[in-house]
Image 1 (tube, one colour):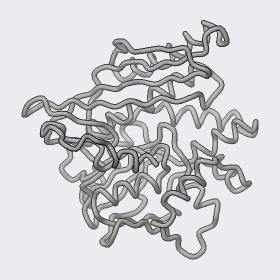
Image 2 (image 1 turned 120 degrees about the horizontal axis):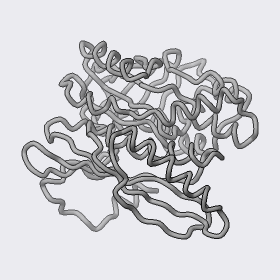
Image 3 (image 1 turned 90 degrees about the vertical axis):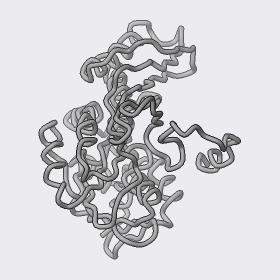
Length: 324
């Protein structure tokens, strides 16, 4: 539906300095200021996926800043987007949500320089993220090349854990895993911008691994293959999804792009749920030349992403995904 709405937008003439817009469903907009500087701008916000207000603020902030990192950018400041049910949610809870978001921005080395708030029926929080990048170092979700290696930085299963939490089925260890990965800033993206062998980058969020990889395929006019056995997975998420716990969004994702995915014989329904599982504040998905793979893996590991893995490759053919 969103694709149809955007396609029907009346704005057809765009300024030449708008280097990245909506054309390939990329992670953020990029506008060139001069030969050495471009502004990266994005926004993201949502309702709580956890009960703890500080964790909610931290997760929402990390998720919003991820889009700047995914473009190869370095965040410089943020604006808060805040909707709270006044008179229903205690003031100290609202303060704790905002403090959580501010703590993540402090980790990123940036201030929250303003924002906007409204009275809303349920809590909504997120950020406008503003960053900078060299115009020649932008990492788009398009530009992958045939033979590129696909690397995923964070394990999958956040949506499954979130559903298990709502069903009171998530263990304390599972909750800690969920918060750990969703609040881990994708800072490596800014350093990936310096590698010529990195051809395309996106972050894996609401459309799941398969959906965001298909966006990369469409933008690059190529296909992709992933090996399910190589995917990094959160252990407790596997336990829950094999027991039948999955998000409704996983099924909606499959309905929207499943026709573009070929599952190898033996791929089970729970595995399909994993690759379509929406990832709040998920990892970076990188397409790079094979000779650059070791450098990319080393960068991620140096930043604490020890579950980073090579998961497949970019292949010739149309914009289709094969799961082996």
